Amino acid sequence: MIEVMIVIQNIRPVSDLRNNWNEVDEVLANTGEPIIFTKNGYGKYVLFDTEAYKQHQINTEIYYNLKLAEQEELLTNERYDGVELMSELIAELENR
Image (cartoon, rainbow, N blue to C red; front, side):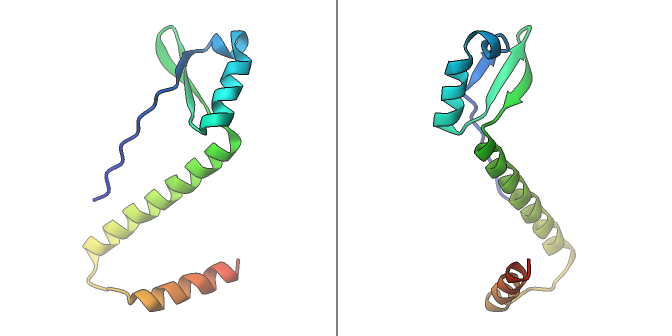
């Protein structure tokens, strides 16, 4: 089983969007980490840099596919040869 630990350090009040935009923009650009904005003390919004968001989407898709593979492994005894599998994946990517 894959365990993922996420540490989020950038938590700010939503008023920072208005009052400290330049600092927020700089943090997003330099860290690539999302910022969680709070409203009335509770997490309300998350803001990502575009590139960080794209990477987050890719990581989410990879994680989802790994979970599907783990479930499939439990349901079947079928196993794949690594060389054959890589050849099929490369062919599929070339056809995109």
